[in-house]
Image 1 (cartoon, rainbow, N blue to C red):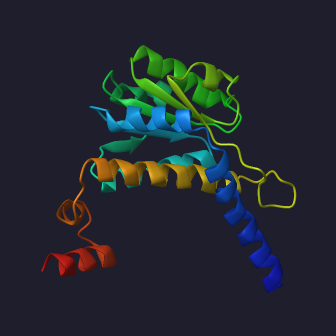
Image 2 (cartoon, helix red, strand yellow; image 1 turned 60 degrees about the horizontal axis):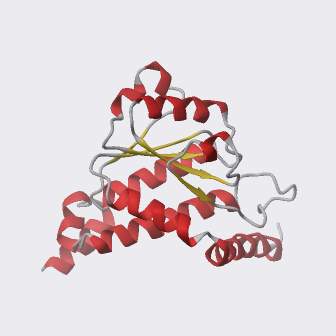
Length: 198
């Protein structure tokens, strides 16, 4: 194992975050932020494969800042799972190409529940792109693997963008350390928050 090669791959991913920061559509991002900030219900996230893993992480982060959120399995959605959604909710659906079969079925189900849909995809002309209330195109310059295929940099980019959105929502809501401690009393984070409260 060559340390230089490991560092090159890490730098590749680091450069992707800079690329996203420089190229992301600000109007799209603002609309997504406003939809989430003004959500009066739950923020529901969903995706398949690696996108599903990113969706679960996003949902957890929202919960930590006091925004009620849950992950909906696209496989469970047509078997009753979509019943959790209603017209007060915002559903974030992630599909790099925007044509994932399970996600497109979930688009149709979400519409029947009158939930707002945020589509995260590279392709605005995809089914997901065309049928979302707001679209956020997260387009990376490269993946980090040798074939430019493995969902690496693109997944990191999605998580990074929604980390930023969550932090800004927390600021807008004046989310305090006291509130943080109520939802995160465990682990080193809880210990530090309790120490700050003394």
